[in-house]
Every structure is written in structure tokens, then in C-alpha cells.
Image (cartoon, rainbow, N blue to C red; front, side, top):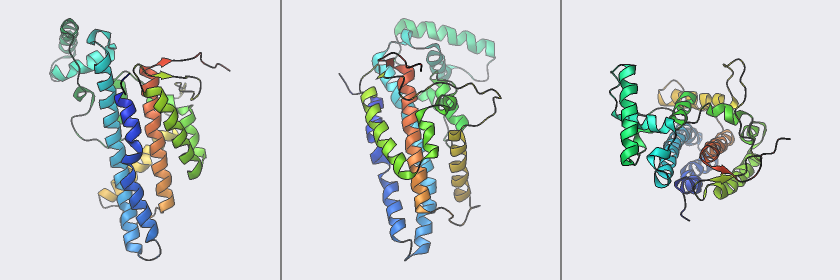
Length: 271
């Protein structure tokens, strides 16, 4: 039984945050003795955390495609994955009818020769800040719709009611659970525990806590990177809280992938 690419990604998440943790510790050490250095580090961390998250979701898409490629033939892939893979070979300036016709021909041919897909067609050609709509689009490309609505009623949403210490405990607990779920492909999970279900968003415009959170960290990053925010208004403690929330969001996105491409190991709890 081989370790999956998603499991490998999961197990290196903590080490990816080491540089941020070191910077925050250094900022705390200089809080009383060198305010200029403290503020410079905090401002840098606000930008770096967004960069870390951007790198994460790109690697998440890459790794799920690698797991699929290693375990499935082209004919067994979902229609959304087949079609999005074919998009890289389509002239975007051609008519929609021509694009659909060529896509269908490509799908049939790729089934015939059992093409091995690559991850590039499922990512953007340009670098994009991790805005909610970017995350939504990337997940739709692999067939997962309304990613933030899925998270809205889940266990992961509860972190917005908790303090740092509780969130850190959840990160450790969730990582251990997902490590078990993701070790082999197809992933195997217990689908009653986290309550990962799409919600019925009646007005269609309500933003979830996670979307608002991403809006906030992107605004902060944009203000610093483009010179409109020249001061530091964020304490080390608030930045640690932001880091822990991003860690939880990373685990939540991995979890959605596990449930979408995995198999439930027990009957859903409907109580």
C-alpha cells in the first residue's frame, strides 16, 4: 500500500509553517526592545502567510491530480476532470460550439489511448492571490462545487468561536484523523464526524466566515505590498491566530478532497 500524494502533502504542512513560526517568535522577543524590528517582522509575516497559503492550494490541486493519475484510467475520470484537462488543447478564441465539438472528440480519443493527465490544465497560467473566487474556480475544475458552502456547516467552521489554544488542539487532532483517512487511494473516511455537507444558501449572496476571512488576509497583504498600509496594527498574538486559522482552512480543503474522491467507511449519522 503506497502513501498517497495528498497524505504526503498533509504530513509536510507543519514544517512549511516553520519560517513563519520563527519570525513570530523573533517579533515577540523584540516587542519591548526594538519596536521597529518587531513591526517590520509582523508586516512581513502578513504578506508571507498569504504566499504560503497560495503555494498550498496549488500543491493541493497538483497532488490530487497525481493521486488520480496514479490510480485511475482516463475513461474512469469524472466528466469535469476530462473536460477541464482537454481545455488546454482548445483555442479559447474559437466559438463555444467548436470548443464543445473538439472537446468531445478529444475525450473519445484520450479514452481510446488512455492518456495520463497532468495537473497544469487545472491551475491558472498566472499567479493569483488566494481570493475566494479563485479557490472556488480551482475546485470546480476538479468537480467540487460550492467549496465554501460545504465548509459552512462543518466542524471546521467552529474555529471562529475559539481561542488560539483550542484551535491549535484542533489542528493537531484534525491532522491525525486526516492522516488516517488519506494514507491510501481511494481515500477512506467516516462521513458523520465533520458534517461536510453543502448548505442551502437561500439568498445566494451571503458570504461564509471562511470567505470573509480570506477577504481580510488578502486586504491586509495588498495594503502592505502596495504601500497603502505603512504601519503595523497587528500583534504577534493576532498573527498567530491568523496562522492557525489558515492551517485549519488547509486541513478543511484537504478534507473536502478526501470525501469527494474517497469512500465512506461507515453509515452516515443522520441524527
